[in-house]
Length: 60
Image (cartoon, rainbow, N blue to C red; front, side):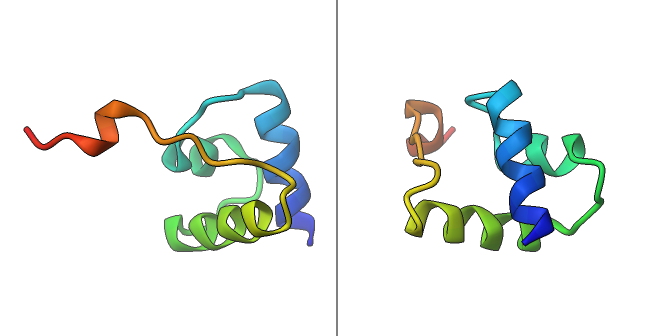
């Protein structure tokens, strides 16, 4: 639960950041996969919402 709180607090100060930016920005260093799992849980609990940008939808 502590990691969830860290992510929420980070997002309060840095809205619109990517999963990787969150991983780099929190004090408790976790793997990218862990951050993605935490974000999925927070979205499921409706504590945060996911923003899909056009950049993520296009191939270059």
